[in-house]
Amino acid sequence: LAALIPNQGSVYDYAEVVGRNLPLQSKPIPFIAIPTTAGTGSEVTRNAVLKSAQENIKVSLRSPEMLPDLAIVDPTLTYGMSPQLTACCGMDAFTHLMEAYVCGEPNALTDMICEEGLRRIATAIIPACEQDDPEARSDMAFASMLGGMALTNAKLGAAHGLAAALGGRLNAPHGVITARLAPYVMEENVAIAKEQNRKDILGRYKKLAEILTIKPCAEIEEGIDWVKSILTRLEIPLVGQYGLCATMFDEVAKDALLSNSIKGNPIPLSQERLESILEHICQSCSCHLNTNGDSIEQDKPMVETQ
Image (cartoon, rainbow, N blue to C red):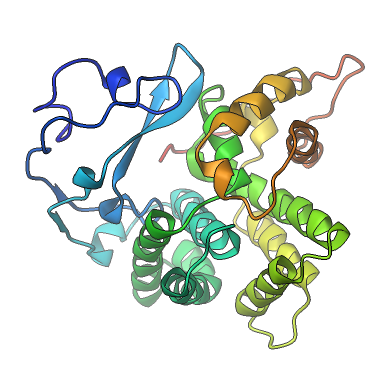
């Protein structure tokens, strides 16, 4: 709103992908960002995410002018968040940091930011969710802010590229989608990196595993297993419960390839690779594919939206 109030026209004039992507003509009115969850880090970013009902996709309105004039990150504002909302938001912060850390355009500054944020999430997300622990809440709020800084100064990847396409089609919280995509995007990237002998990428995933498991010699697979175990322990809902089915894979993958986020993936992923990731998250669900390739309808979970 701060950006659109002084700028004439439709939001689609300034939106990416489905809009005209025009630059803002006037500086946004002054605004202060005060997060009440720990997930998006949007208080330190220069973009707003919008859902296009016409195009069934989430897109960004982005400008350097959209950085808040002041950001106030007060962990006490997150006290009392439900365990499920804490988990979904927290895993969104994790995915920001993880993707920015292994992205195709890392830098020394974002490496430091990501490593610090990931260390905090690795030890804080469980006590924040299960105990509403004040120190853990503080760590999660700080990590969320670091995630926003990281994605603003580096890139994201396929998890957020696919999430943009899925989020426009499914009435599912963004944090649920990115969390469920994360381990399978990691697996796909690692598999291709091994095929191509990309030691630089594999080295980053190994360091990521060491941070998450707090083990100095952890293997890449242990890091991926850590993510999967966290999803299970924190009872992150399954994407299939929101209606994801095989008939969507083709269009979702095509839309994901148009997103800005996917351009930061450490390795280019084909449409077929993206569809494989979608198949994995469908297979991980309690729903099953029927003979037509559609997921069998399940009861919708009771989940709070971010």
